[in-house]
Length: 248
Picture 1 (cartoon, rainbow, N blue to C red):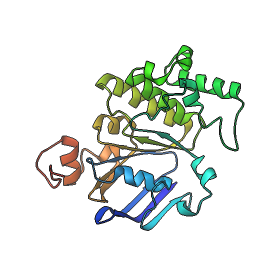
Picture 2 (tube, helix red, strand yellow):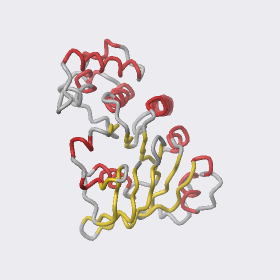
Picture 3 (cartoon, rainbow, N blue to C red):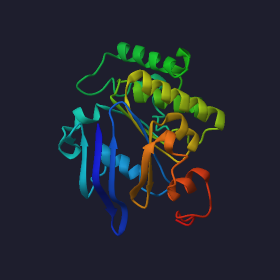
Picture 4 (cartoon, rainbow, N blue to C red):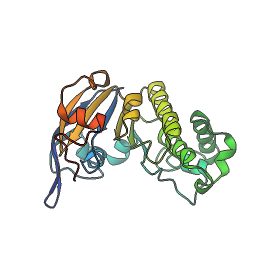
């Protein structure tokens, strides 16, 4: 569904992406791993067209993402942001229904609220949460609200940006299980960027290792532990020594 060939991106003299080649099959869950500052978020933004890549091609179903009609293109995506990115001034249900109440496919307010409450139920939140504000919720609950918003419009493709950042191990496990269940139920194509190995093992069908702007290794998650690739082995075991410098 998503194909990247020779994708590069620089910011001034900082070469962030140096020729990324990656294919994400329809209905699969791809997790991109790598340390902080390796270009994972930049790659995601390039796919969405939020950042224009310098060279190479990115296609969605064979269509160049830079030539797609923006509203129709973005309507295919859902996004769970790293920090939740909830609107403080909106109630929880209004956050979840944000897309539903805007654009060409705008839903009536009552219908949008009903859908929002159903999505909140799907992520394990009770209907009475709908009329609260984000500041009244715990970090784990806010993350669930963000997940409910990501799936509210039934997207074909869902991006997850560091989905367990800031959560304790138990809540991180809950979020990982929810993500996996929802992606499978919806038959969605998923792209996750993370450095949390528990998320990788829970969410991934395929894994790609991004380092210094290129994909060092990619393959099925079942083959990750056995690969001799030194970058993958150092990263997944958290070793201080190896080809990845601890100073970045």
